[in-house]
Amino acid sequence: MLPFPYSPFAAAQHLFGYNDPKLLKDAKKTEFVKFMDICEHFFISHPASGQKEGLELERVMLFLPASETLTKQMEITGMAEAIVNFSANILFNQPKDTEIKDGKQQTKPLCINGDDESVDFRYISSSTSKEVVLVVENGAFFIGVSLNRKLCKQFDYCVHLPTIRALLERAYNAYKLFYGSFSVVFNADLVHFKNVLDSFFAPYLQLLRVCKTPLVDLFSGVDFLPLGSLNFLEVHCLMTNCLEEFPQIKKTIFLYQERLIQYSVEKRDLIVLWHFLTQTIVPSAMQAELTPEGILNEKSTANTSTSDSNKSGFFVDSSIIRDYLGEFSDHKFPKIFILDGENDDKCVEYYLIAYRVLNATACFFVRADETQNDSINNDFLENLSDFIDTKMSLIASTIGEQFSNEITARPNSNLDIPYHFIYFNPDSLSFRKSFAAPMVMSAENAVVNNAVQILPSSMHRLVYESYDKFISECSTTSSLISQLYIKADNDWWIVFKRMERRFLALFLPQQYSATTTIADIQECVDGIIQSRFPNLFIS
Image (cartoon, rainbow, N blue to C red; front, top):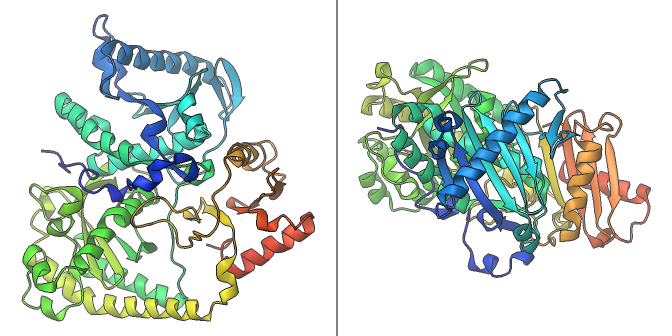
């Protein structure tokens, strides 16, 4: 029995993407592209399984499209294995910031994100495609993807290989959240392992959308909600009291709407957990809130207390989220794999118990082992809801009132500033952007200005080449440059600012073309930061 026996993407496409016919009608007018529209092939291989002559095909664990000939699958995975093995011998004596690409030693641009940056990888370029191969789990498995140059040109997508690598790592981390490492299922049942890979990655990639501005997908972080010190202290105290009152609970996360306030999970798990919560658990809870109360209580198996009618909140259990994820088999709450300690690479199974009150969602993680099987019973759930319901309701009301007052007090003139932005702090994992993905519910964007025109395709290469050459931490000039102002041929301004490792990119459209000097544009940028992002270089 699998720990999470279903695909978390099969039932609701709007969790990871949204098939809007208007968006697909003319791809060149949209900011996002369906990943599979530009993907030539995707594979996961286990080289050790295909070492014997005549059994080379056995190394292929998953290949998309599945309609590709077996000979082609064997050739592609074999070529990737040969390149990895050949370059490994060369890279052994090379500095860490170099790689072998097309037989030449080149500087490796850094992907500054919150994911595990220790994953080995190769970039492979040819006249027809660009490919990224990840080497994971001590070299036991390869994950490869190839993008067709012709299709990318057709969709106005400029390939940035570090961005594609970041997307692959995110997909791998999403798999590990639900199933653990590849080796866990592979060692248990090979046939089942192949079925799991297909049921997970096929819909995941079909629903994945990539932004034409490469830096948007390069960074991976969390949207934090800035709170006043007293409000944050109330949230922190509540979560700490829950840990003390209920020994079964080992870790916690607290969200308001889709923005993170507090967490005690390991930092390496935070990003993938936040995506799962904001793209699955929170939307499920929001839909349940629209359900008549009697029907909700009848459906939910975790909200059966006789005192539930006096409570504001409810548990987000399998009966509520099954329309998004499919049926659960034998447990009320999702089982996930997360780390036990920052220095421990072993993932452990936990139950994820989410409790929703107004716009606040508290998440509790309980070990899913034999010693804890009886700990998540009706008494535990009832005691937990009794303990937090009223307190969460007061906290959610206070936070909502605080932000309502801030919106009212905000000058109207600041709401119409036409620009796009990307902000990322790799130390805190704080990440914000103005590019709204084509989803029903946008989980990553606290500030979205749909009135701003999308970036012209002619700027895409300029953006990431400028970043790689001057701003990336692996560039030779990164330690010398703290800000960069670029005026494109189409009169757009590109502004990069760095403070320590924190990064802000502003994209200013033609409305700023009248600003002809660096001093003038710098004054505009300072005004934007002061009026809209006063705490950006603090969070």
